[in-house]
Length: 233
Image: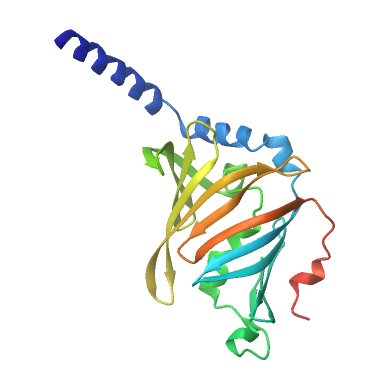
């Protein structure tokens, strides 16, 4: 029995060593390969995501349209009203008639800065060094029962953590802290139900955060997008 425990402990130590030996670049490479490879991701320029967000007991139809590095538009149909949010590299706007807005309002600078990261539809880990981002391995954790690599991701003065499924290479969760209206907030998003689109791109079809759960029914990539939709005019 004692010998069995020694062997088991040794086996565990070898296993732990092999996990810890994974460098940040190796983990990122596994993720990029899981998402279709660098060449495939580099060809992703636009995406349209249709579905709904479940929040506060309501299912709200949404359409999210993105153009790489240029613009994002989120359209929401709420109780018969058409609402939207627009993010570009220079500014952000919101028009929410459901909140008695009668004209678009510009987002505060801190909210726009926080939302700009969503303009990178290829993902922050893709060519991260070219973006001035540093990534380092930060151990391993369990995420919803799955073994995950933990990566520390730093861009400027913003730090976040990304959890990569050891088995699949997909992102399971991201966490970060944000200063919003003078208060520090812990933000967490979990990603699941990864599927391949007809164009061969892989996306999570379910995203859960403190704001609710987004479920996508349809995602199409590299479709023509009139960039006028990123304007309030």
